[in-house]
Image 1 (tube, rainbow, N blue to C red):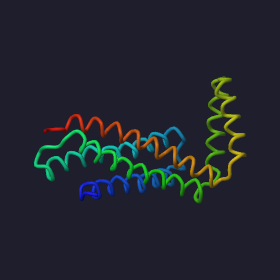
Image 2 (cartoon, rainbow, N blue to C red; image 1 turned 90 degrees about the horizontal axis):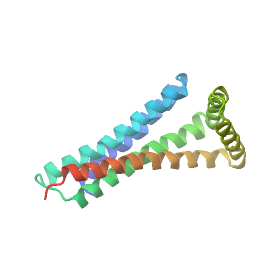
Image 3 (cartoon, rainbow, N blue to C red; image 1 turned 30 degrees about the vertical axis):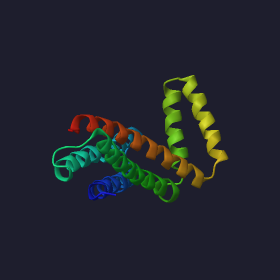
Length: 170
């Protein structure tokens, strides 16, 4: 693993881990809509490390030239490390800090669905509530962590593609 990947990957990992932890823990007093925006902001910051890592690698390691493949590979690894940080923060939060998070969020979403009189959303949320009873808290935390990893990774992957296309110089 190159020094660039270690450097920017660890920055992305710690932004994801610490940023998402702070957003979840300090954001408990905020409404869920604001918490979602802050969470997406943290995931966006981890994805930004992808671009900066690829640009840094091109400019310092490869003397201003980088192939699309090398740029994409670097970006994907940095994105995965950022996603891992976000996922770990989510798992720890839902497992230890606020184990009732899924039920609380379901109640919040159900309130919005009832208020908007959306029968499809209401039935989906009722089915989701039933699903919660089929899984243990640990399983739900790891499922949620996996989902957060995938969302963060996909965002980082898109940034990797864009960065590789923009920054490539043969």
